[in-house]
Length: 626
Image (cartoon, rainbow, N blue to C red; front, side, top):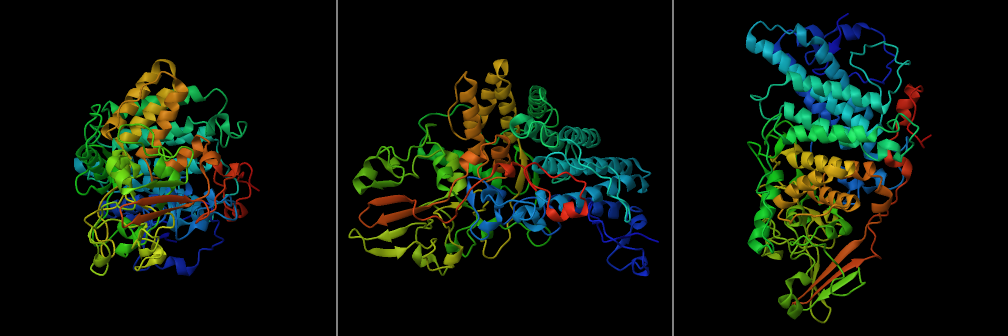
């Protein structure tokens, strides 16, 4: 019997289909290929590899990259307004029976157990058959070797996602066959899983060329950056005695952490040193002039924002990114998904007030909400005269450059309004507040509020929109985005290195601070100075929170540092009154709670779903789940 492949094999590792070889399966359809046909030609083999890339994100309709619901909504930084109940990590409801988006290939497929294993099966099939592809010329032989390197990278990436979500998992480098007995499969330890992934990364680095790759394909540097990311996670508190220290599925043996930190440090340093290609932060890494002028702040902000709005050739900081065409193929629509409702967009993934306050001032000092009214963390007011004398009385003035690249707040400049909204916003400024007369009479509702005149159901629930990922040149209502989604960039590697050095302490601590300061200086902020490890750790965690604001990194960080129970709190609304006499009122309304949140310690690791364990009861569940 011929095995039938639907353009890309989709045999789930743990599906356990009770299927017999019927005549139906013997008939090849017009949209399917036999295994021999797929690997009889380099073109179809490349197409097979291309689909393995697509399924790094869980399935073909939701590839790796940006999603309508961001993983950051499961952290202390963002609010998903359309499906908040599916953000089960911050609801205290995550369980084997209720996985929310973690159980959806379409939403968080990059962490979906079944979806990742389907793609691992695809990659295993590719690796088992690439040597069958006819290759007699030197270019064709080199192509096959490169494709092997890409396949090892993809498998390493998918297994890294499994490790960071579940701990130790089922390891397999061979093709599973229909009818095979899976009941003997068991989970490996987290240490064994890490070693398996590192072996794949080593293979990828050895097989991938140093240059000449089509942009978008995996490179040596992408594999090396993945190694840095993996090892830093493995060196964390979560995996080194912070949670179930005796459970080898989720914790390394006692005494492992120092060696893991050293390995993470060295992996990041190799990328920084140019071992796998030349990369540099976009902009300058010189200590900035303080105080910054308004023009300076805008310039630094624009440079940072360009990392996420870039199109065409990657900038010098980008190690690997996901690319999107305009008319067909993979779809990326952040302008529609995240943009303000007053532009006929969907307004999802709203920044939370505590996260907004965490951005520093332009001089590098902490932002203080109660600076002008000590002890009052709720209400801030300013008269026209006070604003004129001190513009920083507005909480959105005088902030660090990354704030203006990351958050859309009331009064933030943005795109020209569509024709039916232009009359309500002649200044093209985001309106998340309302407009009043001096006597308290409301003049108008902000067009980007939930009482506005355009699709108010898509408006922010708490007073902010995310700006990162948006493209000022794209009308989200009508057009797809073509800006890249950056998966690995040099700033991550620098902060990986900084963290490993700071945690190692002693002679390494200053090296960590130096790397951290490069990231700060690029953002227009002055150097950090300290010789105290605890202080350096605080600085590092602050820097990661801001540099990667709204990105996937935060979910992994609050887990591996085991701070989720501290930082996850209820979501409240910021209410703003812009008064026609020039006065202002900003109120953090603790009586307006658009999202109730809680966290339970069991959720530091994802559970294996009830369905998967019903099929494979011998698989040990993660701790503190039934």
